[in-house]
Length: 112
Image 1: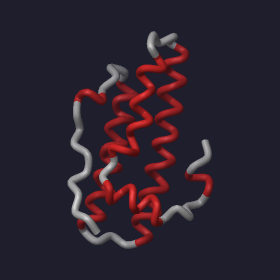
Image 2 (image 1 turned 90 degrees about the horizontal axis):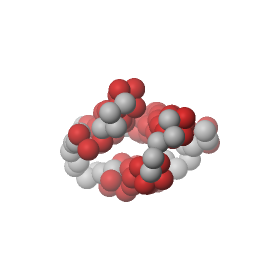
Image 3 (image 1 turned 90 degrees about the vertical axis):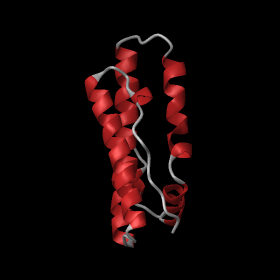
Image 4 (image 1 turned 45 degrees about the vertical axis):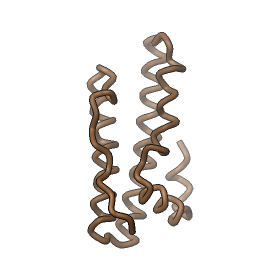
């Protein structure tokens, strides 16, 4: 598999809302854990479990953030939420390929 360094944290990911920022840091940590597993030759079980957790947590975070912004009547919510669509494209290629390779993950990983 391709060697990858993961995602480097960037303060542009910060929202200024502590619990949402903590969730975003956790997402970066989860992606980087998967990247380490790729670099270390982790097995199928590691990838299946890690990707399942990542997808589940990502859905949780995006839902939490969107609900929070709606409750706060956040101005420009649509503009702010647009980068969420770019999260997967910014993932390292090796993780995207792994997601495709293990596309037979349990459906509950992809259901809210």
